[in-house]
Amino acid sequence: MLSVVVPIYNEEENIAAFHAAVRAVMDTLQQSWEVVYVNDGSRDRSLSLLTEIQRRDQRVIVVEFSRNFGHQAALTAGLQVARGDAIMLMDGDFQDPPEVLPRMVQAWKDGAKVVIAERSSRAETGIRGKLFPLFYKVMGLISDFPIPLNAGIFGLLDRQAADSIIHLQEGNRYLPGLRAWVGFPTSIVYYDRADRAAGEAKQTLPKLFKYAMDAIFSFSYKPLRLGLALGVTVLAFSLFLSMIAVGNTMSHANKLDASQKKNRQQRANVSGPWYHAKKL
Image 1 (cartoon, one colour):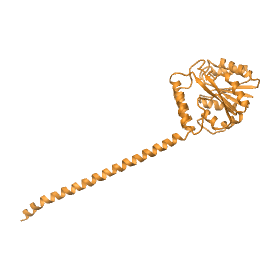
Image 2 (cartoon, one colour):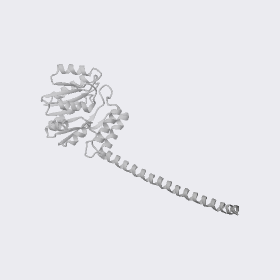
Image 3 (cartoon, one colour):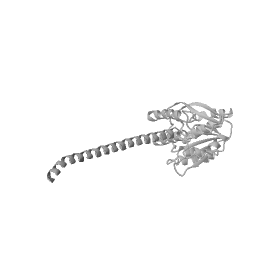
Image 4 (spheres, rainbow, N blue to C red):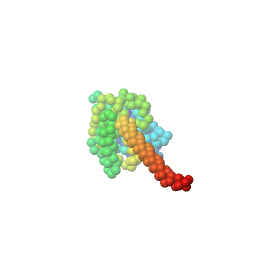
């Protein structure tokens, strides 16, 4: 069996057309299949549309979250529920084209345990279009082991690779990194990432920033080492300044003591003759 896992958050504009496209592609593979939709606390009509699709298509499974737990949590839940020998992960906004799924299945049949869909190009513009390439460059520089760049969650996991990821005790998950970390034979398929078919991007800039931080700190010790080095440097510099301050204070105190002694001696020299004169 083949499984497709799709996280859904406020995608009422896309759900019907997306499922129709996935169904048309999966039916060409001549294998049993299922789609696991994970409703990540949607506030629109996404859940009702999904349950209606499930009522009409017995190959559809709907997982409902009590609230919005996030993209990576939804994907993890879908992996836990999926029953397939191979599990494909994709977003439900048509940026991950369903037409790529047969190529990933073929790569799996050819022996790959992990298939990564890597972007040849992407349609995002504006600040998002600039931040994504910057993130991948930074990630490539600081990662402690190779993580394919220009690749998100779109891809395929063999059952063995999926179970390995499920059993990892990671709190803040970055699935593209975990997918690379488990280390199974990997194949790459290339595609052009389209823009959303409808609606607005659900990943806000603050969420994307948190996602990037989870990725960087989960798969690289370099930020921790840099923080330790900076801490040691600041401590050493602070001790150096403290020693200078103590030295200056002691030097000032010695000069002040010497000045006071000199003043006392001068007063003694001045008062001595006057005292003897009065005594006479």
